[in-house]
Every structure is written in structure tokens, then in C-alpha cells.
Length: 174
Image (cartoon, rainbow, N blue to C red; front, side, top):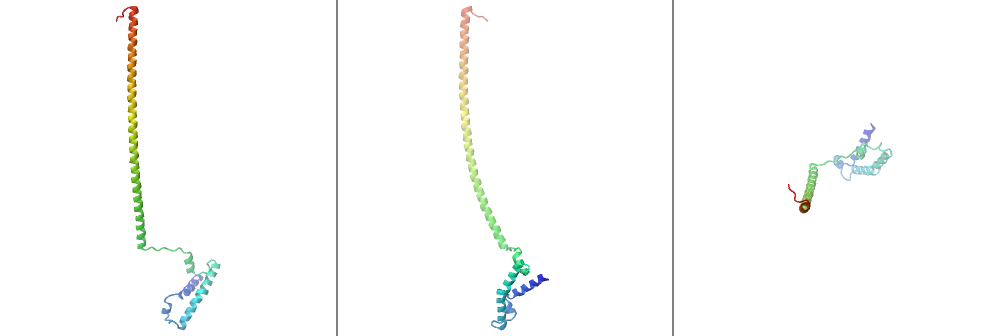
């Protein structure tokens, strides 16, 4: 399969850059094998890999090795350690504590404002009640005065009617 062939070739090229390659192959520094591997690494870095990438780019990734396609197009998984998760949870808890504290402070301010507004409303109601009672007392006094005036006029009329009736036709008897 062509797909697996590209994978094998890429693995072979990348194995040239393995840190343990020289020790695994028992190659000593300065030997002919050392210079061969070094030359091949340089050739791979400056010729093989760039040429392979350009050809793969020209073919819309079809000739890229599967490892390159996976590296470019596969979604990377973010690995979180328990310490990272614990730190994130702790940060969120601290943020929630700050928000709760701010919320309590706002509620306290609202409660104080509401109490102040309620006291003002009570004072207004008491003022209105006093004004209404004062007005009712004035209405009562006026009504009492009107009642007394009306009664006096009625008495005056009766007295006048009694005087007039007694002088013309004599006394009236019941």
C-alpha cells in the first residue's frame, strides 16, 4: 500500500535524527560511519525533507507521508494533568468567591437603599395622614359652625314667625 510505503520512508528519514542512533549503532565520533550519518542528516534536512514537503504541497498533501498529514490536519489533544485541573478548579472557586462577595455587597447596598426608601415612604404617609386629619378637623369645625348658624337662623325665623303671627291674629294655641 502506497500509504504505508510513505509512512515507512518518513520513519526511516526521521530515524536519522534519533538522539540514541550513534550509541545504538556503536558509532564513534570522528569515524567514517559518523561522517556518513552526519552527511546524510544534512542532506535530509536541506534536500530530502524540503523537496518532499514541496512535492506534497503541490499535490495537495497526497504525496506527504501520513505522519505529516496527521501532524498538520489532526486535532491536537490537550493533555491536562491533575495538578492543572486542580489549579483550574481552584481558580474558578476563587472567582466564584469574589463574585459571591460582590453580590453580597450589592445586596447589602440594595437592602440599605430599600430601608431608606421605606422610611421615607413611612414619613410621607404620616405627613399625609396628619394633613388629612387636619383637613378633617377643619371640615368638622366648618360643619359645626354651619350647623350652629343654620340652627340660629331657624330659631330666628321661628321667633319672627311667632312674633308676626301673635301680633296679627292674636295668640295661637295648641
